Image (cartoon, rainbow, N blue to C red; front, side, top):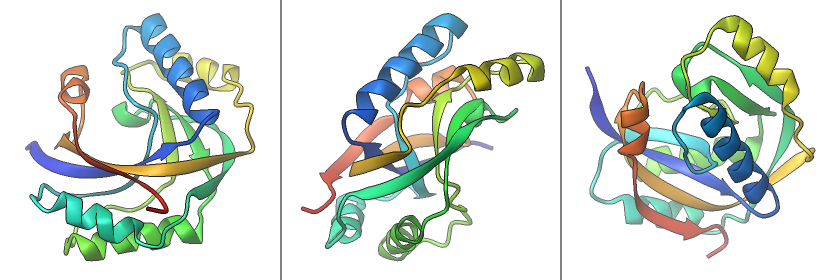
Length: 174
């Protein structure tokens, strides 16, 4: 059963943001897939009215976050068809816990730092051929802001992606 949730996203800084936007648009065009904003999901929890307060608590004293790039991966999961995997990081885990605490939410969301590049049901062969063709010119990506996005959970289709709505946003370090 689908329900509404709030996803908390970290948004990459330039020049990575533009690179990921171009990559996502190019892949969406080539594979007839939805276009979406480049982001790293840091937490997904209950749909709440107080998202501004949650974000304010999350960014309080939080500087922009650096994530170490590992590799481009693929999976059979719609929202992780093709994605950039990042190394586990203590700052990211702390931010995840801060949001969970601020939201007073006991969601079982497990942080797995990645940035999706394509949402599409594809054959395993097509995914495995596509993943190594994506070259990421960064060894680290800086994330400079956070957004709260109202979404259908779980997200399983283009229509679900196109229904996402940003409900709050704030720069890290504010």
